[in-house]
Length: 511
Image 1 (cartoon, helix red, strand yellow):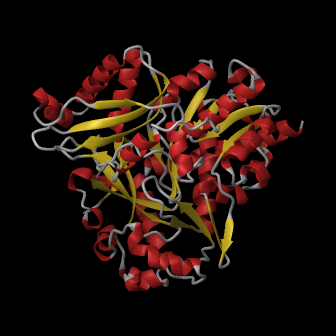
Image 2 (cartoon, one colour):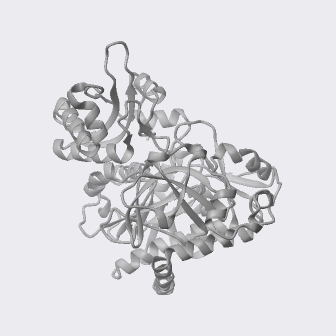
Image 3 (cartoon, one colour):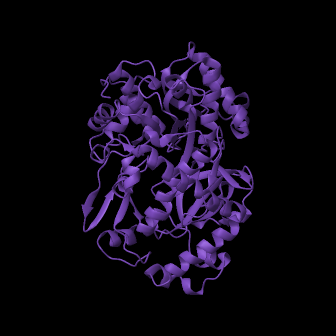
């Protein structure tokens, strides 16, 4: 009876939000412009607001001319001052939360400010909107009859100089409303455990007897957890453990390489997958249609968006455009201004627009994660699509991968070197390599041109990794779980050399 009452109240509230979503879908530019002016007005008396003349700004053009585009390194000193207790530097309300993000290519941590406004109006609203959109698309769903299994970061929240830092997921858990915690599993104490492997075992044993109706987390780590559930229970598929499971809300990495594996362990044509796009800096987009690979850009979370065409990208010296100037199928770097005090901040992600009415996007990669050593302009979207094609042709299944250049030496041509860990290896490795090379040529004309008669690029070198190679690399870097993921593409060989060395060592399965 209690679950039915909660279900009816929450379903009514979440569906009511749909009318507000319709507003920014109908008037996207107006909503964004009003949001920008409100952000500027709110922060006009901060240190940043005074130094950049926020009081004088009344339009986007003035904003873009007076406020510089910035990377983390440019504002790190201000963030450190705030972490030491100073306030009103870049946002007027107290900043006491910082999302610790180590990134994927560096051991140096970033501390992203998370204001109370961002928690409430961005992250919490996004969680409700995620459910709202799903319930509106699937009115027969009955998520609140059971619980949502959440798989967040591997760190608890730590105090430092009266401020707090940790994985964003841990910060969100600390601030969740009662109804969200009431309908979630595992318990908060378990969800915030800091030791990842111990935490995974605790989650499995705590949830296998629950009625789990939805999943939420990063695909790579959720797959590890679900396979552990099958191992502990001895069941053949997840629906034998949780027969009322209805949807998986996923994000953080591209879902394509994992799709077939999920279909095998959740064998149901009616089971739904819903993608989200969130980061330490904010929650940006949600899949708003069933069986879609597009994400609706959320325009009323306190985030103002700008975009830099990657063909003109020059870091902080780039020229950005507002939402009303974007074009379809162009690769853009994202610049955000937020209600946590990030002003024209480069988050490092790239997207392309698949629709302008409404504004829908697909994530294409990272500004740092591409290979353009030979003019091939290879991005993550290319490698994900090519791998999907090669796996479909060869019957293979992939767990993880990364790619690096092989630099020209003497008369030797350059090439790409891959390290791939398979869930199911192809019957013929040589044939798989040929499929992958041809698929890359099909999805990237620059790569195709460089491969023509091996003029610039030779045939790619494919390394087939030992079991758990990428897991062991992440563990060696203290990056197990949560938002940590493998860098897919790099213009240097540092990661590849580390993996090649680690691949020669036999490390026991620690999962």
